[in-house]
Amino acid sequence: MTTLVTGGAGYIGSITTRLLRSTGRSVVVLDSLENGHAAAVQDTPLVVGNIADTALVSKVCRDHDVDEVVHFAAYKAVGESMENPGKYFDNNVTGSQKLIDTISACGITRFVFSSTAAIYGTPESVPVVESSAVRCESVYAQTKLMIEHLLHWYGQTKGLRSVSLRYFNAAGASDDSTLGEDWRFSQNLMPHVMKAILGESAALSVFGNDYSTPDGTGVRDYIHVEDLATSHVAALDYLSNGGQTLICNVGTGHGTSVLEILHATERIVGKPVPHVFKPRRTGDPSECYAATILAAEKLGFTASRSLDDIISSAYAWHATHPNGHNTN
Ligand code: UD1
Image (tube, rainbow, N blue to C red; front, side, top):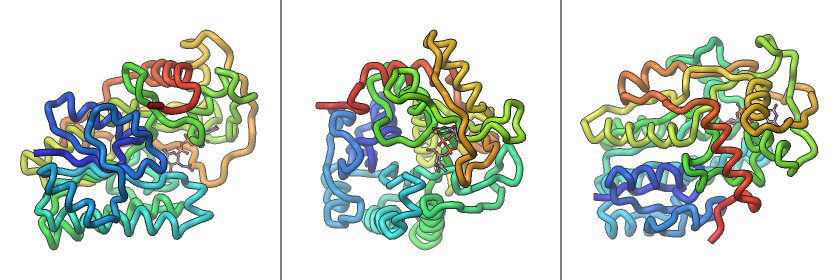
């Protein structure tokens, strides 16, 4: 009995893979290594290849006696998805459809999917509940929603049971700071804060300080990547215990502003974060944080790590990985 983790050489995938093994599971990773790093997989079996390669996926499922899947593999750059939509529809949607079809044909009925709160777009109210309207504002978000729909229909037609985890803002590094995000190309806040404080960039650009939030900067729900990893274990356990298909937020339920992150980082590291105020970034909502009741009720999952834990682990990871990623 083995868990197949697609995209297990990436940021959230590698940390989840390690956590799954610590629960006693046997794991096999399938990753193209286009964006992931073999070193992040450590000593877990790694198959280098694509989720759309149906012959390869069938072979992996047979050879490793796979009985459940956690699917991370996807492109995730919002801006790029708007410039090159075909790349995203092809890899994320068509690739996932082939993966789902293949694992289903292999008799696998349990599937956990890495979805995103980006599906909600600018939320109509906060905290955001799962029954909120979906308003995809990017091709990236649309591809994730389309995969949720695929999972629904494979559930209806093939008996696949799935949990789609709608992540809020994944941040931080593994508790021991040995696994983390490849921060060379990330457009997200936390890597930019760290680059600024480490002198890797001249200054952090704070996008907008005229939002209708307490300090005028954007508010998000930052969840520690180890907590996020734990939610996948909880989702697999839920499915193993007979749980039915579920779409569920994964966040902390607390909103934090850009300036709060900046000031907490200065306090923890003991140095200033050079920053400049810039206009709002197009498409950014003012506030977005999760309603977490469904995850608590259905999965028994509640985030346990603090904002300080997120910042400390992110700083330790950035400070000790000058290349931005794990290397062999
Ligand atoms: C982004 C993605 C979203 C994805 C999520 C998690 C966009 C528009 N959305 O969400 O699809 O699911 O990451 O990976 O890219 N900020 C700055 N300066 C920076 C970077 C960010 O001030 O250099 C601010 C933003 O304006 C925002 C907050 O920090 O208020 C968080 O931004 P970011 O980390 O990019 O996450 P989201 O935009 O919430």
